[in-house]
Length: 456
Image (cartoon, rainbow, N blue to C red; front, side, top):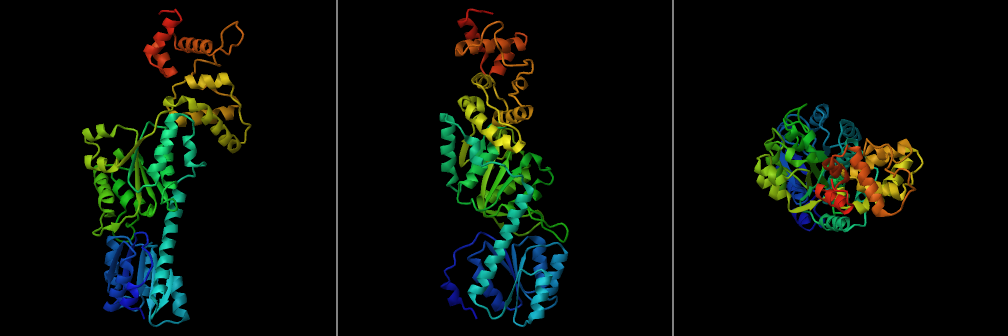
């Protein structure tokens, strides 16, 4: 039999935060089990009967229940069967001082994860608990895999390029990944914020855990809090939240300012106290995860407008990283173009394209308002059609601009002039529209015309 002295000398390290419920009618055994697991699990509660345990389960969720079979009132075996009928799938370890092979078989058929016979050793108990919590972790990861689509490429590959801008971003991501602090990613749509969050996860100490992306704008406002933090209650209404499935890993909240006020307040509990309270529950549950948030909005303006809590904003931006738009690192377009062609051509079952220098130069003149995502979509469309689909960028043009009745030139200044004049012609001489399509300012366009002596 185990003793408190044996417990004090036990060298087992702390495990990821988990909620455990002990159900045993013997006060000494309850006290011992609580002491044995409290130092290793985030939260350990105890009950002396199945009825008392059922009340706790209705108020909050547990990762594991250690359950004695022989209890006053409803037996542990009967309560386990009732739990499974209600749809509760948490891990359950049954313990008893009186058992035979038939009892063990019945326990496994009822849905027990393990079966321990009293008296038992501390290592036997800890191994059973550790294995059960590992199964719970794998179940969470399987849920995440079913919920999210495979990216099809390593997250880091979205940040290719030799420009100083991308080199600095890769360096900042690598440094931030090594920390456990919250990260706030800012940038326009299509700059790769989710891939940056995944790169932070894969490059950090939680890489073995799940990566759970949540697009806050898609959560129904009246259900956002329950979707994130879970719901307490009786059979049929209790459920785990997405935070539960991110335990031990990284939770990524995209467009975080879209969360309603109640969910923002609950999120503060994750950051400040590492605990959550499921909707309708009276109990707090421990949280062990890293939080990464993102937005394409100006979050300081959102705070000023009252749409984002100021205290939440300041807790999120411990590490703030800006993802640059593609127009700020256009020299990387050629590298990204080759990468997307090599990635997508085999997947689409088509021959890869070989863009010419003139086509690449043409692409570098475009403004790319949709950023890297737009470039990837352009490559995919071009591969399907079998040629660089340049007319999709400028619908008024059927082909890259070429000077009429003149042989092709390789002079970059001449190419630039031809291209700008063709774009201006495609928008019926509207210089403001042409400047937007070219990704330059109206002043820069006017300066070019002055240099060429074209005036207005």
